[in-house]
Amino acid sequence: MSIKIRKAELGDTPFLAQMMLQSSRAGKKEGMFDLVFETNENAIILKKLEQLVQTKAKSYCNFNNFLIAESDGEKVGSLCSYEPRISTKETFLEALKEIGCNEDVEAKLDIIYECDFQLNNRTLMFDFMEELEGFEDVGVLKALMQKSLLTARLKGYRIAQSIIEIGSLEAKLYYKKLGFKEIKSKECELYQERFGRIGVILLAIEF
Image (cartoon, rainbow, N blue to C red; front, side):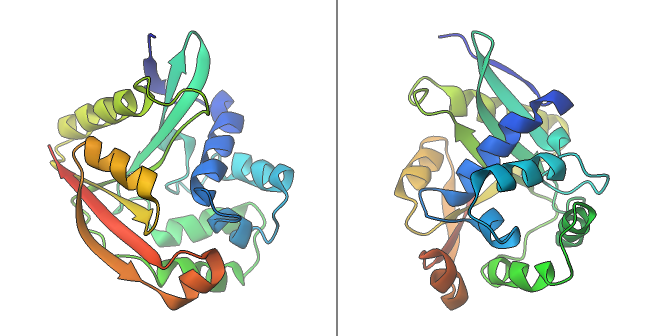
């Protein structure tokens, strides 16, 4: 099966929204976007996510940060890579307010950020690494990662990181197959109360 990797375009926003929602839930009943948008209705969340990837505030969710994997002309996977020094928490908050979230969204994000790490600005972050159901084990995620690491090296990066939830065994196994190693973990009571996962793990790869 031939897999083509390309940069995401504005027309990819519905697919990116789908991948972001799938990634955020990661097998849970609800994820970050259910919390932020105060609903579990997929249609409402997907519409909001389509807006989020297009905001003037260049948050890490902006479509320019994504790669798309295609097979036979069909979109089958996504990967977001961003620079923490540019796509900051403040920029993400600004983007959320731009699409109509009110002031209390900052308090909601505290549940997420309480279980976060102080990131090194000299590393590249990966997020929303997802593939469509039925396309597992055909090399979609590996192709996305290889392209992202090549681009990162050309930009002068030598370390990339990603954050997954404690208990996401499948994601952890796949990242390890790609060469990532566990750096540290963090357990958080509020996070567990809201999402049913006890915390998060920071993974890194040198290349």
